[in-house]
Image (tube, rainbow, N blue to C red; front, side):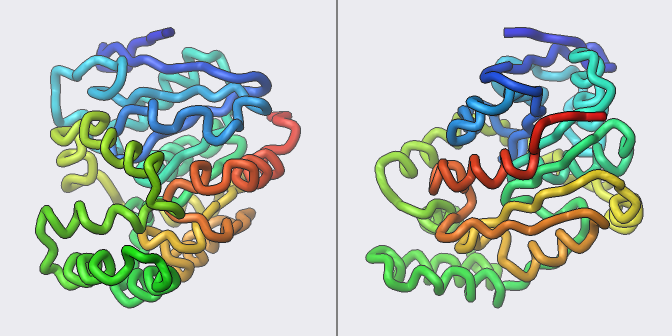
Length: 284
């Protein structure tokens, strides 16, 4: 397992698996061990996945300064990884909360990002509002699921600000296309993989400046993929359309039947979409 030093001296780890051109992968959570990304449904057959363990997660060290967990400060860690890999420009893939970090990296260092793949992205860094109505409308696409009625009631409570810890636990089936043993195992592992102290700092005051970030992304010259899940309540269709529109050269792909983890929901379709976007991997 290779390691490198962040600018503040924190030792960070990354995992390189697969064959083909490198693809730096940023996990969500926020601040969750990158192990949950796995091989991204078999994308390792086409790309060498460089999974970064964010500081305080996985095999990376805990920083001396907890304030360094803030998302905008993590940009320097990603830049240090690029330098460690001796790459002039990188292809960058980010899932969920990791998309906030990817957006900030792209806004700050647009000349160092070749292609950007945002998978069921969080939208905090770019200031897009997701309405309760859009989340509930997306959730109702699954009204025929046997678990739907009590889980939908819990989601209503969450979207209305009445949610409890139990409510948040109860809505877990909405994150997956199939609420089967595999999905339940992934969900159960999250509590051990996520750094809650870091997550509390990640989006703290000063982390995001949406207007500044949006202005920078509007000038980004590279191709962008926004891959959304058809039934993802975290990223309803209107928000994903708006996110795609922030870039001059972006495409929106909506994976049918997928929720928040599209490589688990339909690995073949997910890999085909991402690899089609990435193409040959030529960074010239």
